[in-house]
Length: 330
Image 1 (cartoon, rainbow, N blue to C red):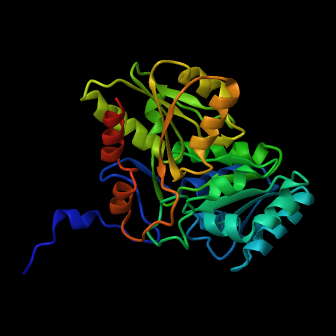
Image 2: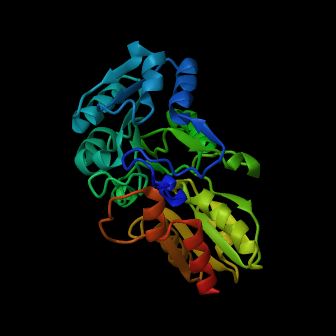
Image 3: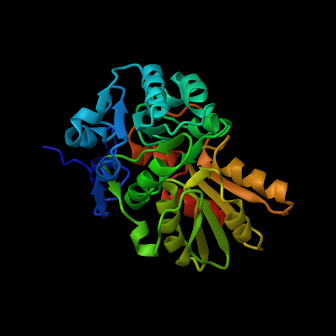
């Protein structure tokens, strides 16, 4: 009989994989529970999905409000078209699918049916960036790049369960369409340790630091915080700025932190093309700030399939790779 190596136990299901560290505090289905709570207070909220209720945590809402839930089948264009029609009547739809399907298959329907008339259609995209090991057909590595050019669309890339719980009611109350990069299942809870509250359109300084400033979004904020603790062991003092709203971007807060002598690094679970790094770089150039910004992001290529811990390390998103990159820059 052979013994399974400890390292093999880190492997996760390729499709719906968890990026939570062993023993990390998590909350189950924060989006689903937040949507139910918001719907209890707002009878106009409805939920739709394209045959992915279980895999986007929309099933929590469906069980609580079956009469306000609509299963549209495997038809993403219909999903967003129907959501726009509901919004036109005064309802507040949350439509869930995988990010790749919303961005690649149904872009025109979101653009012309929801964004152009500025309707309150809330698109909830599962498996954003490198949160699945199923390869390019399901890895939405370029979703923010696709959506950033759409007028009127708000884009939110939450870090953890707290971000999601607090974002949902604010998205429901906001004008115009929104896109939420969903973290589903058992989602880590980390921001509760930093006196943090989500505010739509705002970036927040989570910790100060004299040597390096991280500007991060999505799950990379929890990696940024972990890397900052590791870098402290190397006598490197790191500040972390969490920017969950990619559009509209909080240029004022971010530039205030970048306009210093510290090494500036962006961290995102997205292609280096068209996401947080280019949003920050554009703000820096347009403001006239003379600053080099180092990106930590996914490469501009189609990624491999496999287990998430392996892929995150291969493509530079692991804490160890972040620490290595920063030390190499100093």
